Length: 435
Ligand code: SF4
Image 1 (cartoon, rainbow, N blue to C red):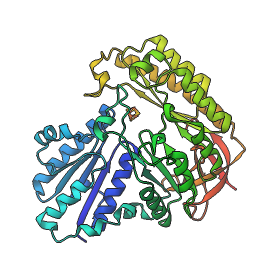
Image 2: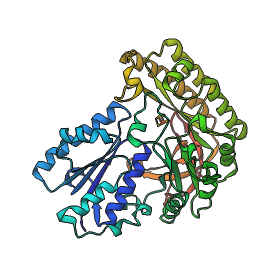
Image 3: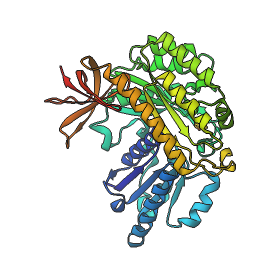
Image 4: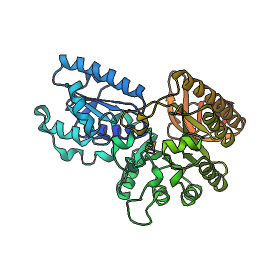
Protein backbone atom coordinates (compact mmCIF):
# COMPACT_ATOMS: atom_id res chain seq x y z
CA UNK A 1 0.00 0.00 0.00
CA UNK A 2 1.29 3.44 -0.95
CA UNK A 3 -0.90 5.38 1.48
CA UNK A 4 -4.54 6.24 2.11
CA UNK A 5 -7.00 8.58 0.42
CA UNK A 6 -10.43 9.97 1.12
CA UNK A 7 -12.66 11.84 -1.34
CA UNK A 8 -15.58 13.86 0.03
CA UNK A 9 -18.10 14.64 -2.70
CA UNK A 10 -21.06 16.99 -2.79
CA UNK A 11 -23.21 18.20 -5.68
CA UNK A 12 -24.27 16.71 -8.99
CA UNK A 13 -23.69 13.34 -10.66
CA UNK A 14 -20.90 14.93 -12.71
CA UNK A 15 -18.96 15.42 -9.46
CA UNK A 16 -19.66 11.81 -8.49
CA UNK A 17 -18.26 10.67 -11.84
CA UNK A 18 -15.15 12.86 -11.38
CA UNK A 19 -14.63 11.43 -7.88
CA UNK A 20 -14.94 7.87 -9.20
CA UNK A 21 -12.35 8.62 -11.86
CA UNK A 22 -9.94 10.17 -9.34
CA UNK A 23 -10.43 7.28 -6.89
CA UNK A 24 -9.55 4.76 -9.59
CA UNK A 25 -6.40 6.77 -10.50
CA UNK A 26 -5.30 6.90 -6.84
CA UNK A 27 -5.95 3.18 -6.39
CA UNK A 28 -3.93 2.43 -9.51
CA UNK A 29 -1.03 4.16 -7.74
CA UNK A 30 -1.54 1.91 -4.70
CA UNK A 31 -3.54 4.22 -2.40
CA UNK A 32 -6.32 2.64 -0.35
CA UNK A 33 -9.56 4.35 0.62
CA UNK A 34 -10.04 5.34 4.25
CA UNK A 35 -13.42 6.26 5.73
CA UNK A 36 -12.42 9.54 7.36
CA UNK A 37 -10.80 12.52 5.64
CA UNK A 38 -8.94 13.32 8.89
CA UNK A 39 -7.04 9.99 8.72
CA UNK A 40 -6.13 10.17 5.04
CA UNK A 41 -2.71 10.83 3.54
CA UNK A 42 -4.55 12.43 0.62
CA UNK A 43 -7.81 14.23 1.40
CA UNK A 44 -9.86 15.58 -1.51
CA UNK A 45 -12.96 17.76 -1.29
CA UNK A 46 -15.00 17.71 -4.50
CA UNK A 47 -17.21 20.78 -4.22
CA UNK A 48 -20.37 22.39 -5.60
CA UNK A 49 -21.27 26.07 -5.68
CA UNK A 50 -24.62 25.91 -7.46
CA UNK A 51 -26.19 27.14 -4.21
CA UNK A 52 -24.79 28.75 -1.08
CA UNK A 53 -25.48 25.77 1.20
CA UNK A 54 -23.12 23.21 -0.41
CA UNK A 55 -20.44 25.88 -0.69
CA UNK A 56 -20.74 26.67 3.04
CA UNK A 57 -20.53 22.95 3.85
CA UNK A 58 -17.33 22.57 1.82
CA UNK A 59 -15.78 25.63 3.51
CA UNK A 60 -16.55 24.18 6.97
CA UNK A 61 -15.09 20.83 5.99
CA UNK A 62 -11.99 22.45 4.50
CA UNK A 63 -11.40 24.62 7.56
CA UNK A 64 -11.55 21.49 9.74
CA UNK A 65 -8.96 19.76 7.53
CA UNK A 66 -6.70 22.80 7.91
CA UNK A 67 -6.69 22.12 11.65
CA UNK A 68 -5.85 18.43 11.10
CA UNK A 69 -2.96 19.32 8.80
CA UNK A 70 -1.29 21.30 11.60
CA UNK A 71 -0.67 18.03 13.44
CA UNK A 72 -0.01 16.01 10.25
CA UNK A 73 1.96 18.32 7.95
CA UNK A 74 2.67 15.50 5.45
CA UNK A 75 -1.01 15.25 4.57
CA UNK A 76 -1.93 16.37 1.02
CA UNK A 77 -5.15 18.38 0.76
CA UNK A 78 -6.78 18.95 -2.62
CA UNK A 79 -9.76 21.14 -3.42
CA UNK A 80 -11.65 20.11 -6.53
CA UNK A 81 -14.85 20.91 -8.42
CA UNK A 82 -16.89 24.03 -8.97
CA UNK A 83 -15.42 26.00 -6.05
CA UNK A 84 -12.24 26.17 -8.10
CA UNK A 85 -12.19 28.36 -11.19
CA UNK A 86 -9.14 29.79 -12.93
CA UNK A 87 -9.63 33.23 -11.43
CA UNK A 88 -10.69 31.93 -8.01
CA UNK A 89 -7.68 29.69 -7.31
CA UNK A 90 -5.48 32.65 -6.32
CA UNK A 91 -8.04 34.03 -3.88
CA UNK A 92 -8.67 30.57 -2.48
CA UNK A 93 -4.97 30.03 -1.87
CA UNK A 94 -4.87 33.19 0.25
CA UNK A 95 -7.87 32.02 2.31
CA UNK A 96 -6.80 28.37 2.55
CA UNK A 97 -2.97 28.40 2.37
CA UNK A 98 -2.81 24.81 3.63
CA UNK A 99 -4.41 23.47 0.41
CA UNK A 100 -1.78 21.82 -1.80
CA UNK A 101 -3.70 21.41 -5.06
CA UNK A 102 -6.61 23.27 -6.64
CA UNK A 103 -8.34 21.36 -9.42
CA UNK A 104 -11.08 22.69 -11.68
CA UNK A 105 -13.90 20.19 -12.39
CA UNK A 106 -12.71 17.00 -14.12
CA UNK A 107 -9.02 18.10 -13.88
CA UNK A 108 -7.94 15.16 -11.75
CA UNK A 109 -4.49 14.98 -13.38
CA UNK A 110 -3.38 18.07 -11.41
CA UNK A 111 -3.42 16.01 -8.20
CA UNK A 112 -1.72 13.03 -9.85
CA UNK A 113 1.07 15.35 -11.12
CA UNK A 114 1.48 16.83 -7.63
CA UNK A 115 1.71 13.37 -6.02
CA UNK A 116 4.30 12.18 -8.53
CA UNK A 117 6.45 15.25 -7.83
CA UNK A 118 6.12 14.80 -4.04
CA UNK A 119 9.24 13.41 -2.29
CA UNK A 120 7.26 10.70 -0.49
CA UNK A 121 5.72 9.35 -3.70
CA UNK A 122 8.31 10.11 -6.39
CA UNK A 123 8.96 6.37 -6.87
CA UNK A 124 5.45 5.94 -8.33
CA UNK A 125 4.94 5.71 -12.07
CA UNK A 126 2.31 7.66 -14.03
CA UNK A 127 1.88 4.70 -16.39
CA UNK A 128 0.12 2.91 -13.51
CA UNK A 129 -2.85 5.29 -13.87
CA UNK A 130 -3.30 4.77 -17.59
CA UNK A 131 -6.02 2.14 -17.33
CA UNK A 132 -7.57 3.73 -14.28
CA UNK A 133 -10.23 5.64 -16.25
CA UNK A 134 -12.14 2.45 -16.80
CA UNK A 135 -11.62 0.84 -13.43
CA UNK A 136 -14.10 1.05 -10.57
CA UNK A 137 -12.56 2.13 -7.25
CA UNK A 138 -12.65 -0.55 -4.54
CA UNK A 139 -15.36 1.27 -2.65
CA UNK A 140 -17.69 0.70 -5.62
CA UNK A 141 -16.38 -2.55 -6.96
CA UNK A 142 -18.62 -4.96 -5.04
CA UNK A 143 -21.81 -2.97 -5.06
CA UNK A 144 -21.87 -0.72 -8.08
CA UNK A 145 -25.05 -1.46 -9.96
CA UNK A 146 -25.29 1.96 -11.58
CA UNK A 147 -22.52 4.29 -12.74
CA UNK A 148 -22.30 7.81 -14.13
CA UNK A 149 -20.43 8.36 -17.37
CA UNK A 150 -19.87 11.96 -18.53
CA UNK A 151 -20.33 12.31 -22.30
CA UNK A 152 -20.27 16.09 -22.61
CA UNK A 153 -18.23 18.36 -20.35
CA UNK A 154 -18.96 22.01 -19.54
CA UNK A 155 -21.82 24.17 -20.77
CA UNK A 156 -22.01 27.08 -23.20
CA UNK A 157 -25.58 28.12 -22.53
CA UNK A 158 -25.00 30.68 -19.76
CA UNK A 159 -28.43 30.81 -18.13
CA UNK A 160 -28.53 34.03 -16.12
CA UNK A 161 -28.46 32.38 -12.68
CA UNK A 162 -26.01 29.57 -13.33
CA UNK A 163 -22.37 29.43 -12.31
CA UNK A 164 -21.56 26.19 -14.12
CA UNK A 165 -20.39 27.65 -17.48
CA UNK A 166 -17.87 29.81 -15.56
CA UNK A 167 -16.54 26.81 -13.64
CA UNK A 168 -16.72 23.95 -16.11
CA UNK A 169 -15.96 25.92 -19.28
CA UNK A 170 -17.63 25.70 -22.71
CA UNK A 171 -19.25 22.42 -23.69
CA UNK A 172 -17.37 19.75 -25.58
CA UNK A 173 -18.14 16.11 -26.38
CA UNK A 174 -16.04 13.15 -25.32
CA UNK A 175 -14.98 10.86 -28.16
CA UNK A 176 -17.35 7.93 -28.77
CA UNK A 177 -14.57 5.32 -28.51
CA UNK A 178 -13.59 6.61 -25.09
CA UNK A 179 -17.20 6.52 -23.85
CA UNK A 180 -17.94 3.08 -25.30
CA UNK A 181 -14.68 1.71 -23.83
CA UNK A 182 -15.60 3.07 -20.41
CA UNK A 183 -19.14 1.64 -20.55
CA UNK A 184 -17.80 -1.76 -21.68
CA UNK A 185 -15.30 -1.82 -18.81
CA UNK A 186 -17.97 -0.84 -16.28
CA UNK A 187 -20.29 -3.59 -17.53
CA UNK A 188 -17.44 -6.13 -17.28
CA UNK A 189 -17.03 -5.09 -13.63
CA UNK A 190 -20.71 -5.75 -12.89
CA UNK A 191 -22.37 -2.38 -13.56
CA UNK A 192 -25.89 -2.92 -14.88
CA UNK A 193 -27.03 0.63 -15.56
CA UNK A 194 -25.16 3.62 -16.93
CA UNK A 195 -26.29 7.21 -16.71
CA UNK A 196 -24.80 9.25 -19.55
CA UNK A 197 -24.15 12.73 -18.21
CA UNK A 198 -23.93 16.22 -19.60
CA UNK A 199 -25.07 19.68 -18.49
CA UNK A 200 -26.95 19.67 -21.82
CA UNK A 201 -26.62 16.01 -22.67
CA UNK A 202 -28.68 16.24 -25.87
CA UNK A 203 -26.03 18.49 -27.40
CA UNK A 204 -23.75 15.46 -27.52
CA UNK A 205 -21.86 15.28 -30.82
CA UNK A 206 -22.37 18.92 -31.95
CA UNK A 207 -18.56 19.20 -32.22
CA UNK A 208 -17.97 15.70 -33.66
CA UNK A 209 -18.37 14.34 -37.17
CA UNK A 210 -21.78 14.32 -38.82
CA UNK A 211 -24.15 11.57 -37.75
CA UNK A 212 -22.70 11.30 -34.25
CA UNK A 213 -25.30 12.53 -31.80
CA UNK A 214 -26.99 11.31 -28.62
CA UNK A 215 -29.56 9.20 -30.54
CA UNK A 216 -26.66 7.40 -32.28
CA UNK A 217 -24.69 7.01 -29.05
CA UNK A 218 -27.64 5.49 -27.16
CA UNK A 219 -27.93 2.76 -29.81
CA UNK A 220 -24.18 2.09 -29.68
CA UNK A 221 -24.08 1.95 -25.86
CA UNK A 222 -27.06 -0.44 -25.94
CA UNK A 223 -24.87 -3.03 -27.74
CA UNK A 224 -22.77 -3.40 -24.55
CA UNK A 225 -22.99 -6.95 -23.27
CA UNK A 226 -24.19 -7.34 -19.68
CA UNK A 227 -25.65 -3.84 -19.50
CA UNK A 228 -29.36 -3.80 -18.64
CA UNK A 229 -30.32 -0.13 -18.58
CA UNK A 230 -29.23 3.22 -19.98
CA UNK A 231 -30.35 6.68 -18.89
CA UNK A 232 -29.17 10.12 -19.95
CA UNK A 233 -29.41 13.48 -18.23
CA UNK A 234 -29.84 16.47 -18.22
CA UNK A 235 -31.70 17.54 -21.36
CA UNK A 236 -32.45 21.08 -22.47
CA UNK A 237 -35.81 21.77 -24.15
CA UNK A 238 -34.11 23.60 -27.02
CA UNK A 239 -32.15 20.50 -28.07
CA UNK A 240 -34.65 17.68 -27.53
CA UNK A 241 -35.76 16.47 -30.97
CA UNK A 242 -37.93 13.67 -32.36
CA UNK A 243 -34.89 11.64 -33.50
CA UNK A 244 -33.74 11.41 -29.88
CA UNK A 245 -37.22 10.61 -28.55
CA UNK A 246 -37.59 7.87 -31.18
CA UNK A 247 -34.18 6.43 -30.27
CA UNK A 248 -35.37 6.15 -26.66
CA UNK A 249 -38.62 4.50 -27.80
CA UNK A 250 -36.89 2.05 -30.15
CA UNK A 251 -33.91 0.99 -28.02
CA UNK A 252 -34.92 -1.59 -25.44
CA UNK A 253 -32.19 -0.91 -22.89
CA UNK A 254 -32.81 2.86 -22.88
CA UNK A 255 -35.22 3.74 -20.07
CA UNK A 256 -38.34 5.71 -21.05
CA UNK A 257 -37.14 8.49 -18.82
CA UNK A 258 -36.25 12.15 -19.43
CA UNK A 259 -34.88 14.91 -17.22
CA UNK A 260 -35.86 18.26 -18.76
CA UNK A 261 -35.85 21.31 -16.48
CA UNK A 262 -38.51 23.95 -17.18
CA UNK A 263 -37.32 26.23 -14.32
CA UNK A 264 -40.28 28.67 -14.58
CA UNK A 265 -43.74 28.93 -16.10
CA UNK A 266 -43.69 32.65 -16.89
CA UNK A 267 -42.29 33.69 -20.27
CA UNK A 268 -41.08 36.96 -18.76
CA UNK A 269 -39.01 35.06 -16.17
CA UNK A 270 -37.80 32.47 -18.71
CA UNK A 271 -36.56 35.33 -20.90
CA UNK A 272 -34.77 36.97 -17.98
CA UNK A 273 -33.24 33.57 -17.10
CA UNK A 274 -32.03 33.30 -20.74
CA UNK A 275 -33.35 29.79 -20.95
CA UNK A 276 -34.01 30.04 -24.68
CA UNK A 277 -37.61 28.73 -24.85
CA UNK A 278 -41.12 29.81 -23.95
CA UNK A 279 -43.68 28.02 -21.83
CA UNK A 280 -45.57 27.04 -25.01
CA UNK A 281 -42.40 25.54 -26.52
CA UNK A 282 -41.77 23.54 -23.37
CA UNK A 283 -45.35 22.22 -23.45
CA UNK A 284 -44.80 21.23 -27.09
CA UNK A 285 -41.68 19.20 -26.19
CA UNK A 286 -43.61 17.30 -23.52
CA UNK A 287 -46.42 16.69 -25.97
CA UNK A 288 -43.92 15.38 -28.59
CA UNK A 289 -42.42 12.98 -26.04
CA UNK A 290 -45.84 11.74 -24.96
CA UNK A 291 -47.05 11.27 -28.53
CA UNK A 292 -44.09 8.95 -29.27
CA UNK A 293 -43.75 7.43 -25.78
CA UNK A 294 -47.11 7.84 -24.00
CA UNK A 295 -45.94 6.43 -20.66
CA UNK A 296 -42.56 8.23 -20.54
CA UNK A 297 -41.47 9.38 -17.12
CA UNK A 298 -40.35 13.02 -17.06
CA UNK A 299 -38.46 14.79 -14.29
CA UNK A 300 -37.93 18.52 -14.11
CA UNK A 301 -36.21 21.29 -12.13
CA UNK A 302 -37.99 24.43 -10.99
CA UNK A 303 -36.66 27.64 -9.42
CA UNK A 304 -38.94 29.76 -7.23
CA UNK A 305 -38.26 33.34 -6.14
CA UNK A 306 -36.08 34.39 -9.11
CA UNK A 307 -35.48 38.19 -9.16
CA UNK A 308 -38.63 40.02 -10.19
CA UNK A 309 -40.85 36.92 -9.92
CA UNK A 310 -44.31 38.26 -9.04
CA UNK A 311 -47.18 36.27 -7.60
CA UNK A 312 -48.67 36.13 -11.11
CA UNK A 313 -45.39 34.71 -12.52
CA UNK A 314 -45.26 32.13 -9.75
CA UNK A 315 -48.87 31.10 -10.39
CA UNK A 316 -47.91 30.40 -14.01
CA UNK A 317 -45.30 27.95 -12.69
CA UNK A 318 -47.98 26.33 -10.53
CA UNK A 319 -50.37 26.13 -13.50
CA UNK A 320 -47.71 24.59 -15.74
CA UNK A 321 -46.97 22.03 -13.02
CA UNK A 322 -50.67 21.20 -12.61
CA UNK A 323 -51.23 20.93 -16.36
CA UNK A 324 -48.21 18.82 -17.29
CA UNK A 325 -48.33 16.40 -14.34
CA UNK A 326 -44.68 15.40 -14.73
CA UNK A 327 -43.23 12.64 -12.58
CA UNK A 328 -40.67 14.35 -10.34
CA UNK A 329 -39.85 17.97 -9.58
CA UNK A 330 -36.71 19.23 -7.98
CA UNK A 331 -37.70 22.60 -6.52
CA UNK A 332 -34.95 25.09 -5.62
CA UNK A 333 -35.27 28.50 -4.03
CA UNK A 334 -33.35 31.08 -6.06
CA UNK A 335 -29.94 31.81 -4.58
CA UNK A 336 -27.73 34.51 -6.19
CA UNK A 337 -24.29 33.31 -7.22
CA UNK A 338 -21.40 35.76 -7.72
CA UNK A 339 -20.26 36.31 -11.34
CA UNK A 340 -23.60 35.26 -12.83
CA UNK A 341 -25.80 37.71 -14.75
CA UNK A 342 -28.65 37.53 -12.28
CA UNK A 343 -26.27 38.37 -9.41
CA UNK A 344 -26.50 41.98 -10.57
CA UNK A 345 -30.29 41.90 -10.33
CA UNK A 346 -32.07 42.78 -7.12
CA UNK A 347 -32.82 39.60 -5.16
CA UNK A 348 -36.22 41.08 -4.37
CA UNK A 349 -38.27 38.06 -3.31
CA UNK A 350 -37.86 37.74 0.45
CA UNK A 351 -36.59 34.52 2.04
CA UNK A 352 -40.02 33.96 3.65
CA UNK A 353 -41.80 34.42 0.34
CA UNK A 354 -39.41 32.05 -1.43
CA UNK A 355 -40.12 29.45 1.24
CA UNK A 356 -43.91 30.03 0.96
CA UNK A 357 -43.73 29.48 -2.82
CA UNK A 358 -41.54 26.38 -2.40
CA UNK A 359 -43.93 24.85 0.12
CA UNK A 360 -46.99 25.65 -2.01
CA UNK A 361 -45.45 24.15 -5.14
CA UNK A 362 -44.19 21.17 -3.16
CA UNK A 363 -47.77 20.46 -2.00
CA UNK A 364 -48.96 20.46 -5.62
CA UNK A 365 -46.12 18.16 -6.63
CA UNK A 366 -46.73 15.73 -3.75
CA UNK A 367 -50.42 15.51 -4.65
CA UNK A 368 -49.60 14.78 -8.30
CA UNK A 369 -46.95 12.21 -7.34
CA UNK A 370 -49.29 10.37 -4.97
CA UNK A 371 -52.05 10.29 -7.59
CA UNK A 372 -49.64 8.95 -10.22
CA UNK A 373 -47.93 6.43 -7.92
CA UNK A 374 -51.26 5.18 -6.54
CA UNK A 375 -52.11 4.24 -10.12
CA UNK A 376 -49.48 1.51 -9.74
CA UNK A 377 -51.06 -0.07 -6.62
CA UNK A 378 -51.59 -3.78 -7.16
CA UNK A 379 -49.51 -3.73 -10.36
CA UNK A 380 -46.22 -5.50 -10.90
CA UNK A 381 -43.22 -3.39 -11.86
CA UNK A 382 -39.72 -4.43 -12.88
CA UNK A 383 -37.09 -3.10 -10.49
CA UNK A 384 -33.31 -3.03 -10.88
CA UNK A 385 -32.02 -3.66 -7.35
CA UNK A 386 -29.35 -1.13 -6.33
CA UNK A 387 -28.78 -1.55 -2.60
CA UNK A 388 -29.54 -3.49 0.57
CA UNK A 389 -30.48 -1.21 3.47
CA UNK A 390 -29.22 -3.03 6.52
CA UNK A 391 -30.92 -0.79 9.08
CA UNK A 392 -34.33 -1.37 7.54
CA UNK A 393 -33.58 -4.90 6.36
CA UNK A 394 -34.94 -4.18 2.89
CA UNK A 395 -33.81 -3.79 -0.71
CA UNK A 396 -33.95 -0.57 -2.69
CA UNK A 397 -34.31 -0.38 -6.45
CA UNK A 398 -35.78 1.62 -9.30
CA UNK A 399 -38.21 1.01 -12.08
CA UNK A 400 -37.18 1.93 -15.62
CA UNK A 401 -39.31 5.06 -15.05
CA UNK A 402 -36.96 5.94 -12.16
CA UNK A 403 -39.53 5.31 -9.43
CA UNK A 404 -38.00 4.27 -6.13
CA UNK A 405 -39.26 0.91 -4.79
CA UNK A 406 -38.47 -0.83 -1.48
CA UNK A 407 -39.13 -4.50 -0.76
CA UNK A 408 -38.06 -7.34 1.52
CA UNK A 409 -36.62 -10.55 0.09
CA UNK A 410 -34.33 -13.40 1.05
CA UNK A 411 -31.11 -14.08 -0.85
CA UNK A 412 -28.89 -11.78 -2.86
CA UNK A 413 -30.96 -9.52 -5.11
CA UNK A 414 -28.24 -6.93 -5.83
CA UNK A 415 -27.98 -6.04 -9.52
CA UNK A 416 -30.93 -8.23 -10.45
CA UNK A 417 -34.13 -7.29 -12.25
CA UNK A 418 -36.98 -8.26 -9.91
CA UNK A 419 -40.74 -8.22 -10.36
CA UNK A 420 -42.31 -6.34 -7.46
CA UNK A 421 -46.03 -6.03 -6.76
CA UNK A 422 -46.77 -2.53 -5.40
CA UNK A 423 -48.59 -2.54 -2.02
CA UNK A 424 -48.08 1.06 -0.87
CA UNK A 425 -47.48 4.31 -2.78
CA UNK A 426 -46.22 7.61 -1.37
CA UNK A 427 -45.14 10.81 -3.14
CA UNK A 428 -41.50 9.83 -3.55
CA UNK A 429 -41.33 6.05 -3.17
CA UNK A 430 -43.32 2.84 -3.14
CA UNK A 431 -43.22 -0.39 -1.15
CA UNK A 432 -43.95 -3.76 -2.66
CA UNK A 433 -43.62 -7.54 -2.46
CA UNK A 434 -41.23 -9.64 -4.51
CA UNK A 435 -43.06 -12.09 -6.78
S1 SF4 B 1 -28.07 24.85 -19.32
FE1 SF4 B 1 -28.18 26.65 -18.03
S2 SF4 B 1 -28.65 25.79 -16.00
FE2 SF4 B 1 -27.85 24.10 -17.22
S3 SF4 B 1 -25.65 24.07 -16.79
FE3 SF4 B 1 -25.93 25.28 -18.65
S4 SF4 B 1 -26.07 27.39 -17.90
FE4 SF4 B 1 -26.40 26.05 -16.12
